Length: 118
Length: 114
Image 1 (cartoon, each protein chain N blue to C red):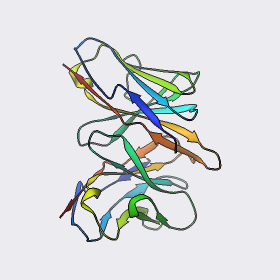
Image 2 (cartoon, rainbow over the protein chains, first blue to last red; image 1 turned 60 degrees about the horizontal axis):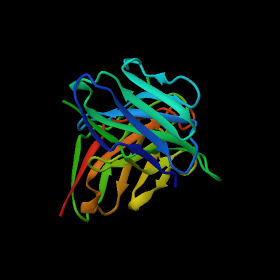
Image 3 (cartoon, helix red, strand yellow; image 1 turned 45 degrees about the horizontal axis):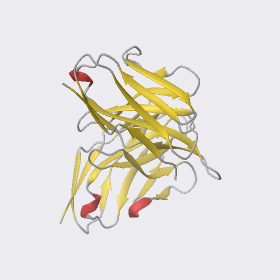
Image 4 (cartoon, rainbow over the protein chains, first blue to last red; image 1 turned 180 degrees about the vertical axis):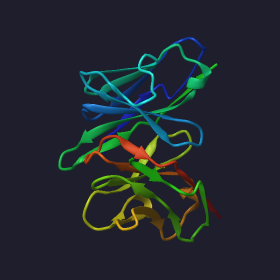
């Protein structure tokens, strides 16, 4: 199956700084990746759809200037949390669409990144 | 509006007993339905999906789910629960006709007691 990795798995930063989270498709190319945010004991909230070579599509209520998404290649999408604040602390999960040989398009999830802003 | 409901925050079951985790959906058109499992501080693992065809779908780790169009439900089931099944379970629906923009339910925590 397809593997999606995220780096770092865990990050602690100070309030006001920026943090970059990487999402990589390791053995397939992904023209579309998704970024989710998960609060403790809550469901996943779709933040944005990341399309290779074009601007990301943000969900309603998600600040574009706060959560910068760059999908510069077919295997890498990055999420940068700018000027982080404690309320940005959360578990961020990415996923990627994969159209594997002989099968339909499926969505594969990364292991998540725990962000703590102090 | 497109939505997924998981009416139970938590389901408790004794090891060896059958388990059911409920999911209902509201979506226009033909839904693509999914179940995922999440262990603490981990991403989501795919369990099974319904796209078309047989209403009973079998997935990973002995789980299965039944698509019921009239009741707009997609309940997850397992005949005999294991302690290791204890985790957070999410039902999700794709409404775009493909595999984009999954809408997730709130999640149900499954606790299997020895």
